[in-house]
Image (cartoon, rainbow, N blue to C red; front, top):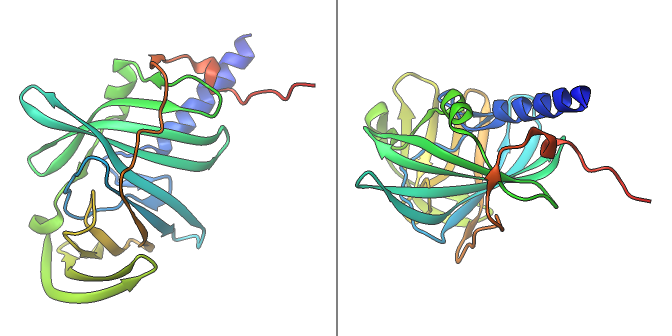
Length: 220
């Protein structure tokens, strides 16, 4: 049992590496950065190509809102595919503070498993801040028309002052406004805008149990 538990914990911590952090990364893929403009039920699907050339598709949506110490907190949900545990749905409760999205609660669900909430100590160790508004850290190069598989958008073109990348942002896209970005060798392109998005996580969240991170064994 000890060996299984260690394997489960290893799988969990490999997942933490892929979660949003202050480094703005999903593994080696950049987190979308733009101007956070959350609307409950609205989202966007992106194709992300990392510096290795591998492409992944991820969707991000706002599925709920609640008050946190007098501030508006939003549940942002996204789906990760291709993990050792299969497709995972993860949602995080965040509050915008001083231009950053500060992550609070984190809930995840694997196929065929109950949802689990990360314990406070793990959330504190993995908690980061994601830039919610790039405008204070970027130069506005003006308005441009950008065409992607999702359509044609009138965008503000921003270039990061530190030279780390560029982004094309439209107010009509939620929750990040991002239509296209090029950052540190990675490219993110809007594939589809999403409406009437519902929470994919079902059931009452249980306390975190590393054994539930183990892949399910096939039954005969």
